[in-house]
Image (cartoon, rainbow, N blue to C red):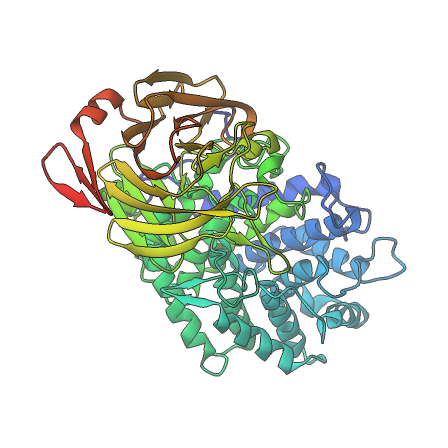
Length: 633
């Protein structure tokens, strides 16, 4: 583990017994990140052109992204200190606003056009301008204010992507309204109305309609750091309740936050799942917003424990890096986990994780003693029917696992797609999916597949949730092989028991295909050790993290280990244990039952196989555990 690259104040284990962090740590981290950007600023300070892979929007858009997303961080730092910061910080962003909206400056920002990336950045600028109004906006020359308004006015009447981007238009035009500039109230109302269409219940929004059928299944951290955040930021801009909308948004966020702490491991790590994971610190944003909007069900000490824990987790692992920059990746740079829209400044959406600085130093979230996370108090089993997930945390090793029976990455403009950060059965705070193209082509980890003799595996695209409650969840997907329109249904039920997950699959497939199931991929700086036996396989990292698969029914005795290099965000060497039913087995159809474990404990898979029994009679599977109790699926 690399040493932190940030000089921080002394830890305070009296106020913060779990993390040692105080508000001073957050301020120091914010200051270091803002200072580190200065060498990459263009002469007029309108863009920050950071080193790294250019996004599909190009270098100028990426430079604007560097300005806009870091301006968010600066705005929270400035407003939280009531302007008592180095005046050069405010001057930098005031100068950048002036140059970026001057078409003759040589650094002018791209005009806002339909569905353009600069829409996202314009929304960040609007939020930052609102939060720093007394210190930046009110001190701009009238001519500069008019140019900023003219640039933001490009949002009016424009088309955005029909997902969380609708909220970018909402806050940008609301800022225009707040300064008495032309805007369209219909744009604002339509965006907020559209948000209601995507509310799935229990605090969860689908990010758009997915494949356009009105039943979107895109659930991930965007629910917290965008879908809940922007409506309440809009309320802050209106200075009121938004005609009653604010009450609804606060109720929904409160419901979401009731379960949200269960997504975080004892080491502070958030579950590694979904899009835009390079935003890292932004996972803390909804917890801060709950306190900021006065709607959180969380105790103040738990809010800070969650937020400080997750940010400290990354800082202790070298983020930001030795330059003070946030690389495109999870810990180090790892491009396979990013999206084509991610440029070198994209990680600075992490600025949303600093929302807590808007709360005064006297607020209870900064003065209350830290409280433990749920996984630090007891084993956790949480069913989330809206996204179709089970959260499974174990106190003894502090790991949280997400069992996915409902969230898929569906495109609003085309057929359903599979993606390693959405299509797997299992995600966790200690592992990442194998995301590099060469590994994703094999798609062994976290997946049950039909595999052709040449090694081509079926993909888990559209996921149909069937059931989710208690410690059980079920779903179906239709396995389809390349070049064939024929679909073969695979239904899966997951049952949680102690540190284990039991998966029961009903598979219909033609003769000649192999059925294969992989466990969690574990990764580290060194090659994981592996072991295989009759009906089981495991992979273990040098720090003791172990992934195990055990055959309980339907599988051949033969097992395997899939090793990869430079495929995983958690380390250059990774390995996944898997089970298989050999090609040519009559019919290739039937019921397959697997015990999976991801743990930091010692594991004895042969003993597990001998002590957990499984009987299949017709449509019923009965699993008997060592204590003698039985679960029927």
